[in-house]
Image (cartoon, rainbow, N blue to C red; front, side, top):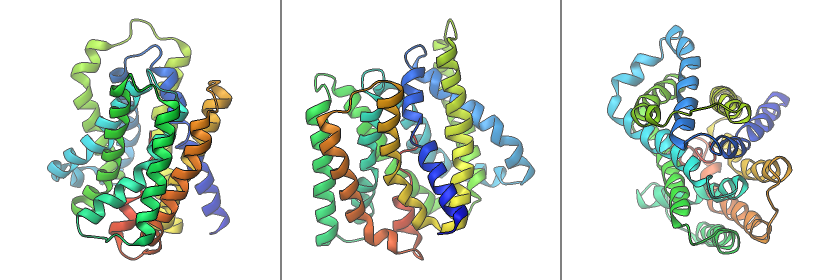
Length: 300
């Protein structure tokens, strides 16, 4: 990898590792719908002039059916569900639970017939999901199943999103798809978010929403596109294994969240399982399906 590639890789690892802490701060004062609406609206408005100038927006909207499906499973559903979960769960716990996205993606592409289970893949799934089980069993209050279910649905959505891209939107410019999805998600959020708009705007929560929109959405996607152009889609997916570590470090260092036994046991198992379970897919650079199917995780 070139020096530019390493810079982009490390930058994206940090950028997509910090949104969990920002969401945690924001939902302490704002409703999760309001947080998600502000993030998508601001992000979409910032990217809109670029997408219009490059004429990449209208082709995405012409395929509104797969675009709507992608938006629901990749943005509008997950970003609300993560905010809802973080009203009760630590940000570092959420970030680590979402590290299981590549494992879920492997299961989905296998069920769809694009891959087959072999010994290595099966071992990876067992190890990875054992890590998730350790984290949930040791760290998560099981009396609040709604939060766990929210993260579970988010992980499934993050795994399905790239499959929709691969099947129906892969030939479109990525910037147009992302911009159109953000605008569409903001429209979907608006009716509920406007009824739950904040009565006051504390500085820390307000800056967190702005950071989510500008840094963790606009800048993140632009860096991700640049990284794909530099190293290819398959190698770019390795970023999925860096984000949880950043999320844990930020949660512990900035939010004073505990470094728990569940994290100590679950983190290495989840990452090891993901590396083993997706190794073949990441090596298959020329066949888009497996590579893209593991590329979505941990966007926060």
